[in-house]
Length: 194
Ligand SMILES: C[S@@+](CC[C@H](N)C(=O)[O-])C[C@H]1O[C@@H](n2cnc3c(N)ncnc32)[C@H](O)[C@@H]1O
Image 1 (cartoon, rainbow, N blue to C red):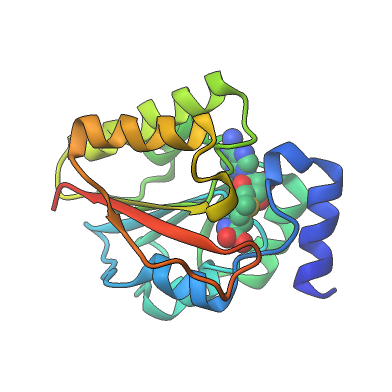
Image 2 (image 1 turned 90 degrees about the vertical axis):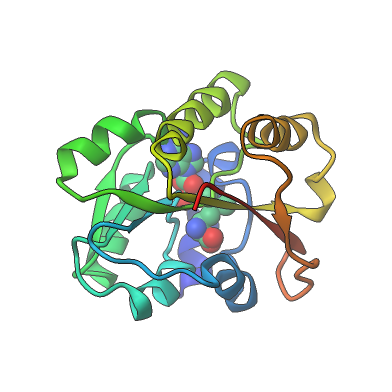
């Protein structure tokens, strides 16, 4: 089945959790992985893998199955991901449990967090818990957190809250130019303790 249709089906089933009607475009995906060099002791953690729009670019630079961990909530999408990316470690789970999922996975130190979760449409308390989980990896040092925010939602309270949470701890974000070749147009934002 076409990736766009699978994504749309997931959105129709759970609009708030999916948060978009289309997977990220190749232009956004490439910006999300720019400069990333995954290794076993510097692994990539992808939160909210969806249909794998970013994963297919990550796959090109991930050297082995110990250098990547993907977490996705939707069981149908996880099934699809396992089929399409048999060499990548995909876990069906909730990002609020990221640290325990990571511990159980046996994957080494996380050096990059590629976060595609729709904070704008997630309940506040879920977003807060996930940020606290992310922070545990950042606190270990040598870690980059990267996410994207859609232009139309950039000033929504939850989008501002995420930026404030990260800015208070890790300073001003590195923000990309507006990626217009994405539906909807989006910015990427990165914070790093590298
Ligand atoms: C905006 S989509 C992004 C999908 C894909 N990474 C992309 O860029 O096209 C967000 C994804 O996050 C997943 N998701 C939402 N809440 C989640 C949670 N608490 N834990 C893990 N995944 C979650 C949704 O099921 C959905 O697949």
